[in-house]
Length: 80
Image (cartoon, rainbow, N blue to C red; front, side, top):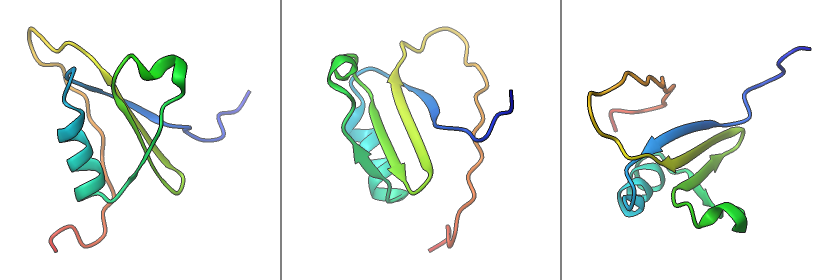
């Protein structure tokens, strides 16, 4: 079996921080918010897309020591 592509990236976010996440991903990166399917919408979080890029944010109670999670972006005109 071959992996053809990455379908989406799942990232953790603190519960209830959807407005801040929306501002960042829509306002800064100009992604489009996609409604989550009804069965999982009640779990919180947000989904964003732009062409083939899909980012899913899910609630995670972040406590204790920080863990390293790295996602590298390829950006155009990031200084403007």
